[in-house]
Image (tube, rainbow, N blue to C red; front, side):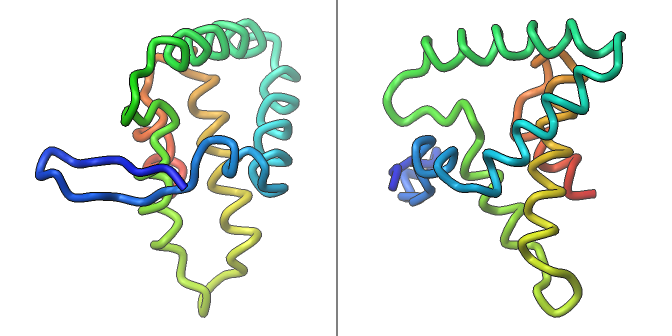
Length: 120
């Protein structure tokens, strides 16, 4: 688990990036978003730019920073109502759409915003 601290110094416990990408839902959603985005000739170059930007953000990230916006993702995923939808399907759809949004915007839009948009 990864510990993050908010401005109010409240401790938030979210999955680490390794735990996140170790999940089959995240892996399949990530690669589905890459494949779907690369099909569109207009969006394909944006994927490379977004991945380069993400790599730079990860390299520059300091301890306690959250470049993948895991706290935001976790909050959005908590909003999935298990009585109204299949949680696994909703999770994969949210992740895929969030990554596609990130790629479409060339990584300019923070992932926290992409997760929130994907939930709408």
